[in-house]
Image (tube, rainbow, N blue to C red; front, side, top):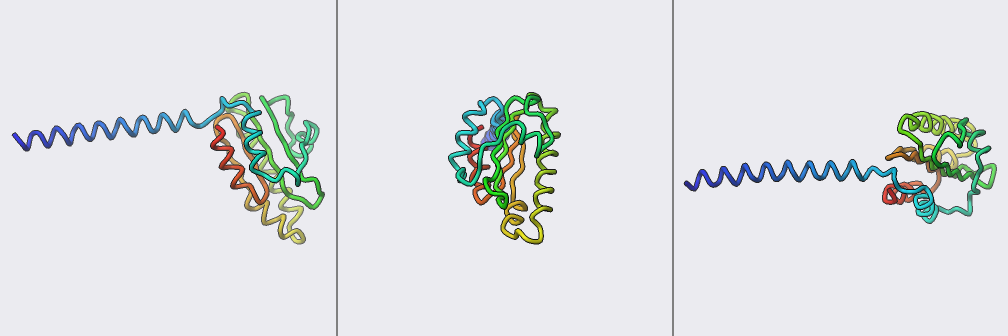
Length: 161
């Protein structure tokens, strides 16, 4: 009788573990973000970076540097360096649908590659920043950060979603 009871406890433990894992996965999927307003995400991320080194760019700059039309997306926030020798940059794009994520990510990667090529050979600090840039998509957002605070900005970005 004791042996049978152990088996029942083991079986119950197995089912409980499967249930816990299932709930955890559901929470992770839901936690991928996307429904959070851009204003909130942008505000939180801007608190984590040294914005003094950057200026808010407009839709023309987004088109010029990324080759994309800001009107095609839900929201776009772009911050560029104040100085021509600066490499700091911050891009937040909230897409209208998931099919746009790849195009934005590719445009951002192309921008990083172009900037890295431009600074390579004479801008050692800028090249280092560009090579350690963070480009990620999460939920309905694409995030790009170049700068000393890129890691911190990305952490805040993830928590904001």
